[in-house]
Amino acid sequence: MRPIRVACFSRGQACQKSLHRVCETEINMALFTDTDSYWAESPSHILKKRLLCEGDSWFSIPSIAHIPLQLEALLDASILCLADPGDTLEELTAGLQFKKIKTLLASERFGQKWDALLLSVGGNDVIGPEIRGLLNAPADPASTNPDHYLNQEAVEQMFAVLDERLRQIIGLRDQSPINREMPIFIHTYSYLTPRDEGHKVLAWRISGPWIHRYMVPLGITDCSLQQAIVAKLLDGFHGRLERIADETNEFHVIDTRKSLEPVLCRNRKGSQKLWRDEIHPSRKGFARIAKSFFVPALLKAGVITDADLRR
Image (cartoon, rainbow, N blue to C red; front, side, top):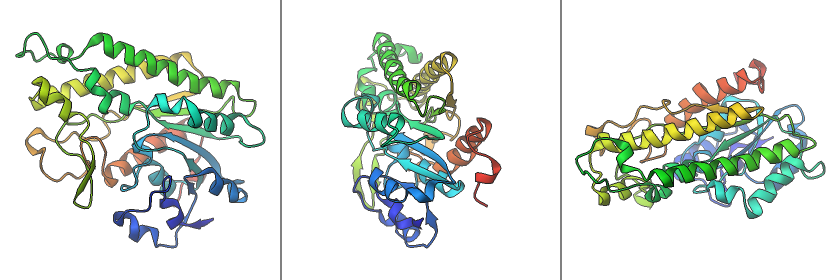
């Protein structure tokens, strides 16, 4: 085991000041963000449930205590998190990342038996910058129907590609001689309010916004309509995931669409308790999702027991 400060690095990115105080504590951690460190301390994993996490910024954004960090605080488990902000499913199922996952799942020499694979994928494709290819300027600018503002052909194509790529990951699991029975968990993000609020570290905006910036040029300026369009896309995403779950063994959908209340339209520019920026929850928001949605799902599936909960 090791102190928390080691767990605060994601692919070479140092802890932000918001996490610095936490990093200096002497609480032992079992969250690893690279395979070398993970295997170097492999004896410490023997008696723990082993969780492999992969995906996007909801699992890795360095300036917020994201979901895997929250799970580490809640569970006495061994967690290897290879997520990276901005990752799409295309990046996850191609090149070096795909090879790394394949090795960890299938190789008896360089991998191991995992108790679960946790995925945070699809957000950048559905409600991230890729949304610009899904939006339409409607024939009737006065329409309040969210369907009229979506390119239905592009939306269906996007979901078909997501479906195909998720099944690639499921296929890796199914073909693995050591992880064929391993459960896979995936969440559905949360309903949110598009707003001109990018991600900032201290006073500097380093990314985003991701949705609002593409809606306004198309004349989609009404806040309620913007919310409805996002909800439509997230509902479609959830529906596609449930279809996969119905056709696949041990594929669990954690429905987090209603986990956080969207920012009120009248308060889009004010400070928020549960949201850090347009699409990322705050530390409190991530804590709620981890405690109230992820942990119950893992308990229900039998991946963890009450004995694995930190007291």
